[in-house]
Amino acid sequence: MEQGADSAAARRMARVASHLRPPTSQMEEVAILKGSDCRAKGAAPGFKVAVLGASGGIGQPLSLLMKMNPLVSVLHLYDVVNTPGVTADISHMNTGAVVRGFLGQSQLESALTGMDLVIIPAGIPRKPGMTRDDLFNINAGIVRTLCEGIAKCCPNAIVNVISNPVNSTVPIAAEVFKKAGTYDPKRLLGVTTLDVVRANTFVGEVLGLDPRDVNVPVVGGHAGVTILPLLSQVNPPCSFTSEEISYLTSRIQNGGTEVVEAKAGAGSATLSMAYAAAKFADACLRGLRGDAGIVECSYIACQVTELPFFASKVRLGRSGVEEVLPLGPLNEFERAGLEKAKGELAESIHKGVAFANK
Ligand SMILES: NC(=O)C1=CN([C@@H]2O[C@H](COP(=O)(O)OP(=O)(O)OC[C@H]3O[C@@H](n4cnc5c(N)ncnc54)[C@H](O)[C@@H]3O)[C@@H](O)[C@H]2O)C=CC1
Ligand SMILES: O=C([O-])CC(=O)C(=O)O
Image 1: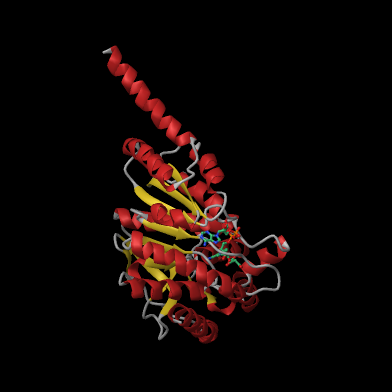
Image 2 (image 1 turned 90 degrees about the horizontal axis):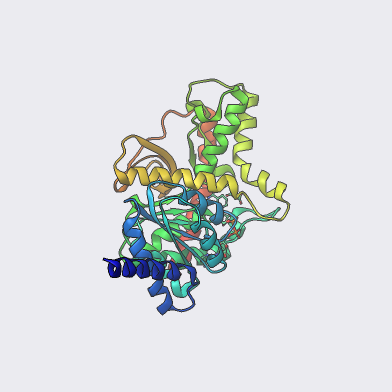
């Protein structure tokens, strides 16, 4: 009896010790994973989620929010810097998800194996004066490498792409998955939720409503004129003056730049983005669980326009995007905006596809 209690205590201590030691080699990483797996068995059933770029401005608060999500049972934090610290910190939160850290390219495959949802906020952010497309040269390669890992280690995972320029990085991801033979357009989603979050906030301010009670569809893409708020389809139904329409459209399209300028060289939106990404990831997980009626806007492959990718209203479910909803009726102002958006989007998509195939 006593001996049994002793060995149970010894097992508990061994488990705790394995969590206190940071991984220094692949062998040690494997040992720690075994320790964590014992713990994971005790955790509530749920989904396995990886954040790639977890040490960054978005990655850290996003990881914190995912650790708070009761649908997550295992949370993998991957980055090329600082994941031991971020992981130790977040792992002390007394919520259900088991947290594991992975540092550097040699641990990418371990980070990805078995994941249900992979969220990608890896890559450099804008400074004042830059467009999102100016990030292409660095971020395109980062997204390609990470997606090659996903194709190899968790080809069935839902992928949420945050890294800019989203209008090009999502087509890059699609090409990587096509080459690997794992492409499923239903599972690849560009995160444009921040545009909707901003639109709901700014429209709520104008209408004097709680932003949580406002829903503005935002379609097209995620850069400048490609961000197309459909103010004629706001819920609750309402009407705006032409001054309000032009103020709101411009503020929503330039929301990212507003933050970049206010941060004055220290980066772009991180906290509101983490909130938006966590909200979108939660919607994806509820869809995977089988919840009904989950509709979000996302930049995906679809036939809503003649372009191969377009941010649209989508219904999420067990297989990712289960239905792409039509654009709905547009007014003249929105139809003109759509034409402008399509011109820039076509170039960004072409640039991404060409990069992935060169
Ligand atoms: N989709 C959207 O609505 C938004 C997208 N973004 C984009 O998100 C990206 C990240 O922004 P921040 O977090 O502010 O940048 P950040 O520089 O604070 O963090 C980026 C993180 O990515 C990591 N990283 C770099 N190369 C990596 C690699 N090969 N593998 C894994 N991790 C790698 C860095 O070490 C860093 O920790 C930017 O491209 C930014 O433009 C930002 C706001 C909104
Ligand atoms: O503006 C940026 O560079 C970051 C971003 O995508 C946003 O805040 O919407």
